[in-house]
Image (cartoon, rainbow, N blue to C red; front, side, top):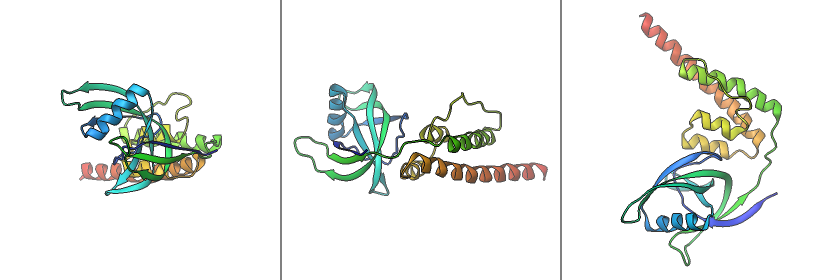
Length: 200
């Protein structure tokens, strides 16, 4: 089922995954207005992903979590938390507000293949251990889905965008499995080069 709606827009070069906390410094008048209203009226807003100055087709619906600091000129340090991923239809120009609105669609096949998720966990553990150079423990049931796995990997926004562009949860898990295999191969090569350097 697809949910079409119009929400305030705050385009950024950032992808905030569901459950992820992200920190922002708010200084533009339009976004100071947006954040104040989102806090006071408890509504979410959209962060369409901007790459190389171009608006992309997907983005993150977020809600204000914490306002840490408010400065005399109205600037703020805040955190938001990711709620859902959306597909962007269009950006609507401001009318009675300083900020623009986003016409978005939320809806996808979110059913999870337990078999695919079981494939993901050992690969994730192996890569995290290679990266840290020590044993890593994950609580039972983690990762619970593709987004939880991606949060552990600290991806660059471009990689996060590749992930959210996948059409379903099963496709996201398949993408992550392939990405982890590439990352592991690269990390193993780095470790071998380090060993060869120390031996010479």
